[in-house]
Image (cartoon, rainbow, N blue to C red; front, side):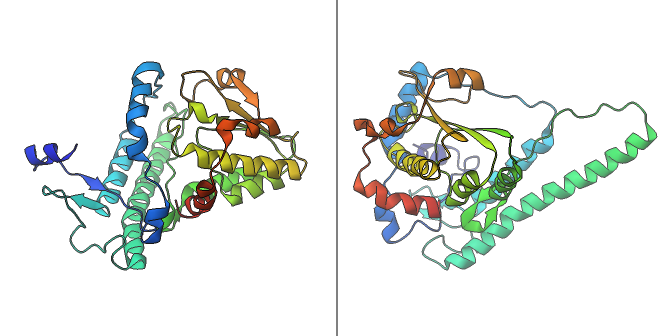
Length: 296
């Protein structure tokens, strides 16, 4: 699909294919393909019954620059598609899975962290400059929104998003009401332990498998993880404090719409939820799911 563009515009097109260093050897055969199996069906659904929602940020070049630099850094540590339909690493870069995995991850981590640290430095300088201006001017428009781009690339040892999420969950106290919404339920064991160990009230809204964009491929793993978590909630007697609901609308995909609309079209998860034939989880999914949770 991309080779014709590479042939036609060799000076303008670059195709970088990221391959996680953890997916190698026997694991390549155990973890099934996802993209090839689902993209056609997903595109069909996208054209017929899906409404996309976008948020437009104006006057925020710093954010655009950050993501552009981040994509550039990841591209540099990815495999580069060649015009003869082969892939090669950037010159001087360790191979993802044929070379030394430790050296590759260290080099890749340095490139990505350089982008993050440069962005932090630019923001620090900007805050310092703005503070000085505020002291000399009485009427300067104050920002009303802050954005914190969080990066999570666990194979490279970069877990900023995880640390922030754990902090938010840890600081929730008795009486706090937290709403978590996700289309793909894949809580790490650490997150599960935090939710079950705190005193705050949690309302977790999930997508039913049928409204998951990759229905028929990966959702079985998410069903299995959800079932495991629900069993833990019940085992600890936390059903009142930790409520799980599933969104379902016939012929629609799960989208992060206005929260109240999602809850109005959702049902509470119960033991009967997992007795439906569509919730049957094959043995290979149960075997592969721990690998997915630990490595990706």
